[in-house]
Length: 168
Image (cartoon, rainbow, N blue to C red; front, top):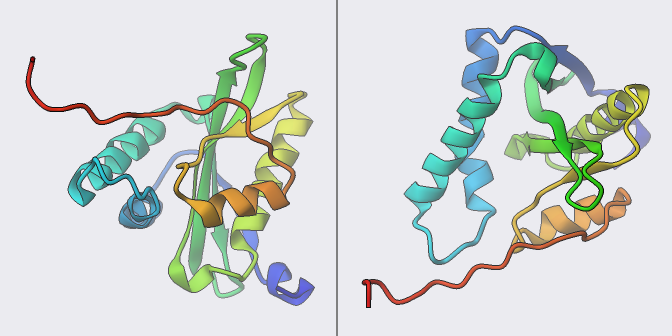
């Protein structure tokens, strides 16, 4: 990606969510679900999970969350990020948590995701957070590599084991 690609992306912070932004965000739910790669869930279960997660995030008051939309120079939405405060699992201190990040397929490689993470980090630093963190599906190798290039490290990991159905 060249510097000129990234300069074509602008980030706007969203307070109250309008119907167009809401529709755009939910339109990326299937894309978020697809990268999970969790064989013990159906595609529909993962999409439903993403829809519930997004709905819960968007239901928060604007002062309790950060919602960012990436747009190209023509005003076309290219991606979004959502962040909120969460306690650190070790110290309990407040951290800036990147809850959601998605870009359209057309926006891949244009710098939208990098610009969204940069805006999230700048906001977190401005608010005085010491740590920024996020969760990413373990099987999302592309996403994990992206975050590692931006300086994120593995911290804790949730592991899951599907069990035989029935009570036993």
